Image 1 (tube, rainbow, N blue to C red):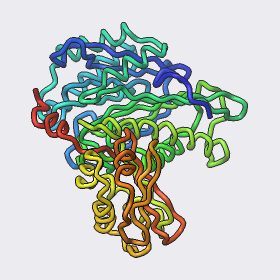
Image 2 (image 1 turned 180 degrees about the horizontal axis):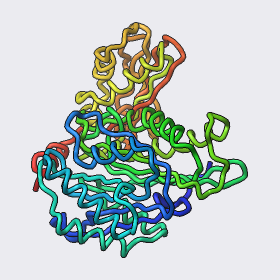
Image 3 (image 1 turned 120 degrees about the vertical axis):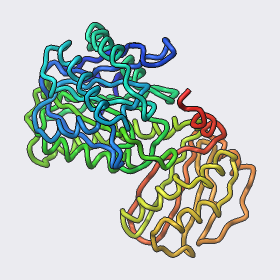
Image 4 (image 1 turned 90 degrees about the vertical axis):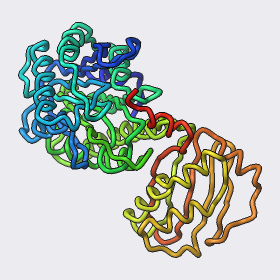
Length: 408
């Protein structure tokens, strides 16, 4: 596997665009994006588990259930089109129809997504005009992918892209993706808006398995603020233009493809966790030697979702009790008297708990380690052979500031 530059336009036959349509107040902030496959593509997706689902989520779930090939995804940023009733559903369909008309394809081959403020109606004049701007700006260049990734940002401070190539049966297959998300991020499905594109030939059933399983090990392992969005959407389009033999069984090609998708998804997930609203640090919780994989997942998630842990990392406070406490209420039954705990970063590694007992350690070194941009917490449970890793961010003053006046 080789990491390459780019995102959703990296794979053969994919084009993208990002424009300012007038949804957001600031003209310098793009607010509509389009990803388009020049040929119909096999599609798969995962969506929010929140009972309150935005209009585009309901639309996309219906398209996925239809089983037909899809060809485009249009996304608006600034308004979520959630809690908008029947009018929201109609507005979403109007956006899909307008985009379909511009592209000359059927409306039921156009996926939609929205992100932004919940409860506000869509400015449909701007949306419809924006679809024409997107068609005009379509390109298969790397920069077009960048523009699309920037156009779906809300409180994100950086755009999030990743692309890789692999060899399948002597053919070069490319996988690219983009995502957005820095708030309302919690492990309970996809926890973001994103799209993965690939020129691989793979059956719809196996593509769905790849996406569903890779999400469990990437996006479902991050948390920023314990809030699961109404708009969470992660879709994949595979157009088969690479010319590899279609993957229809779980063979060696399937395993290779899965690993590549998981790598791309994990890369984006970590970027999202590190770019949490107001965040100054990425927190990685690595649980080793748990009794089961399920235990390892619960323990690692409990660490990165703890507000006390997040605040301690923000303050560079090596308060080992907060980390032990977070594991203790995770719901996992374990023996706390044999647990070892470490802090690690580019500044070094230090043991702070041995066999369940807090150690006297070098506070200056611990503070240096916790001051790094990326901090890893390692918990050795000594109960089995299962491991899991989760990612989160610190809790800063700016998180409250951002969410106290989000609508403005």
